[in-house]
Structure formats: C-alpha cells, structure tokens
Image 1 (tube, rainbow, N blue to C red):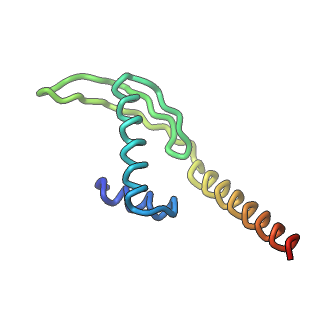
Image 2: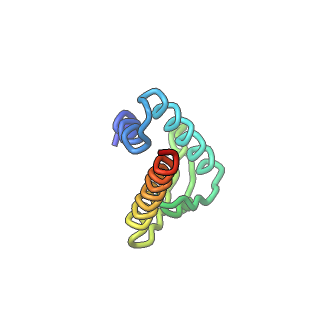
Length: 101
C-alpha cells in the first residue's frame, strides 16, 4: 500500500476530509517511525504488537527487521467494539431527540 491509499482509507474510516486524514496519517506515521527507530516495542491494537528483532545500517539506510504479533481475531474484536460504540452513540442521540420532542 502506498501513502496515498493509506490516507484515503483513513479518510473513509475516520469520516474526515482528505486534508485532515493526511495530517493525522503523517503524524501517526512519524510517531510510529520515531518509536521504532528508538527500538521501542509497540503494542497497538488492532495492529498488534511490534518488536524490533534486528536494527542496523546499510548503505546509509536504517534497516529495521520487525516482528509483528497479532492474536487471531484481533481485527474482528476491534471492529465489533467500534460497531458497539457507534450503536450506543446512535441510541443516546435517539433518546435525546425523543426526550426533547
């Protein structure tokens, strides 16, 4: 996946304008890149747990060999949680409208 596709997917998933999605994506990628360069272990559901196995330089480039561990069903669990939160928000809004009317 290229950066443009990534930004487009973030835009759709977050329901924001392209410019906002681009700014959010660039900020997230920068933070993740810096953390990985510093050798930090990341635990970020639904992505999973990232750990640097090896880190070295070659021809002036930083090479990171990353291990990604993702428990089975993690993506589905996060999607279900998001659906549940959206439904709860819809229910609360509907209740508020009924109480006003």
